[in-house]
Amino acid sequence: MELRKDPITRSWVAIRNGEPQEPPAEPCPFCSGAQQPAPPLLTLPENSAPAQVRVFPQTDPLFRIEGETARAAEGIYDKMRAVGAHEVIVELAEHGRRLSQASDEEIARVLEAYARRLADLKKDDRFKYISVFKNVGAAAGQEIPHPHSELVATPFVPRRVLHELRSARDYWELKERCLFCDMLRQELDQKTRLVEATENYAAFCPFATRSPYEIWLLPRRHHHSFETDTRRAATAAALARLLRHTLERVEQLAEGYHLVLHTNPNTSGTLQRVGFWKSLPEDFHWHLELMPLVAHKPRPYIAKEVYFTTVAPETAAARLRALSVTD
Ligand SMILES: [Zn+2]
Ligand SMILES: [Zn+2]
Ligand SMILES: [Zn+2]
Image (cartoon, rainbow, N blue to C red):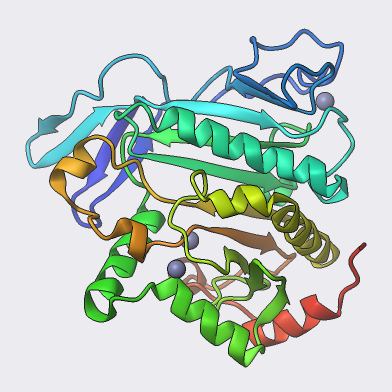
């Protein structure tokens, strides 16, 4: 596998010949009693058997941990080796349970596993960014049936996050304020797109939503880094609860969803030397993005190039708020 940079959009893409092999679904390698695919990299709670959360390296990873990135040129093009890490975060011991059905304590433990793996992988300065995401449902491309999240460490910052980082930095240079904090303040004020707010966190449908019922979840107190936000650790149960409510709402309307964590890139290596994100702790604000997948008819071509939704975020938020959640 190789990474190639699109010189027009300046974004990296992974090129691989052939489909990756997913671990066999039967028997499930993540169920208790099964032959585990590898020794776990992390288990939570620590020193407890059976563990609730177990993190494993992906058996057929997109990115390999060994070697140097070895950037090279091919004429005007840039390429590099696909050095990185790919891990499976097994969230719960039980095969048939969903994260939305877990207790707040259990969900907090899954989020804690995200934070621990992020902190650990960021010690390796070959990795510029660590993506943590979760695909639920066939429509979202869920391939492993056991409840899980995935983590991919890459030697580049993915395009969407890079756009966010650049735009947050530009806003900071202009106003010396965090774009996300400003956005959040307005959403809490206007309330039309707000889904649920607690003392420390808020969930709302973004103004320029990309798909029906898209929801962002943010800490109300500014922090750029999910894994070092000490307030997150102190309010873990509150975050878990809001996430559970949000998932419960989404599952009543959608057949699946993508959940993705956006946090600060790894600035310990070359990014720091470049001095790209000097204001990063002030300008970026970690958040979770939830993209539900609702059944829909095929779209005209334009919908593939331009985000297009048939549910306005104000309508979406009103419908989401009206849905019942378990206390
Ligand atoms: Zn299983
Ligand atoms: Zn902020
Ligand atoms: Zn984001």
